[in-house]
Length: 269
Image (tube, rainbow, N blue to C red; front, top):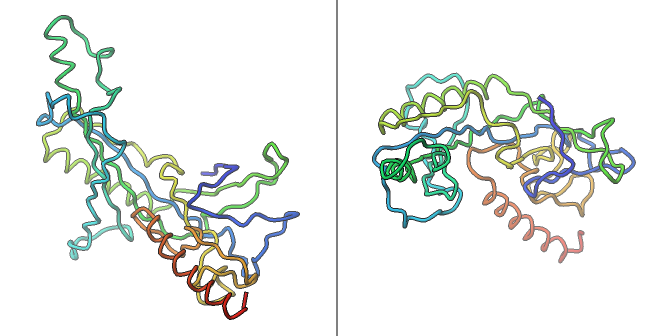
């Protein structure tokens, strides 16, 4: 699957070329190993939440209650994929619920009771799965499509690979188990992972390493080629994660900033 964006979100920094030539790319690794999250979503209604108090409120979009990857506690389980995933359950009274007064049939007090019954009983399960770095996942400048300023847009190559598909199937089976244990009704399971780009957690493409021949940055997020160039975000990641990348970005930026300050005091920058 190929898709294009003119802007990469704040999690990812891609070094754009001047006059179509990559900078700081003696390794040839800039743009390579694009990593995202494998997102999978599902929903169902829990009978124990029927007629929940309306005063619970609309709430935020995601509760960020996290079920961490449990595969570590199943050492004898045979799985056909590497790494793991987390599950974020969420339940709230929404301003515009799926089952609402417009799409529930009925009239009078029984109708009102039916509307109240379903409001707030919806539970959503959403997963972030860890993707593996791959030579088949990369970014480049589109040779034909340009933005409104006449600059080539970013073209992202993001095919689903066997590890992604196998992990998705495992996540889907896990959702079935959770909903069955909860005696959920009106269960809606996905037919495929969410569209690439759903997580907005882009990583990789300017990854760090120990060897200038195989990486773009050193361990302090500093370009091997351009000493005053630092890339302090998820683009520096050499591998992915099944968790949100923000705290790791902050930790790397902190370490890089302290290193940069020391180098400036030594007049090395």
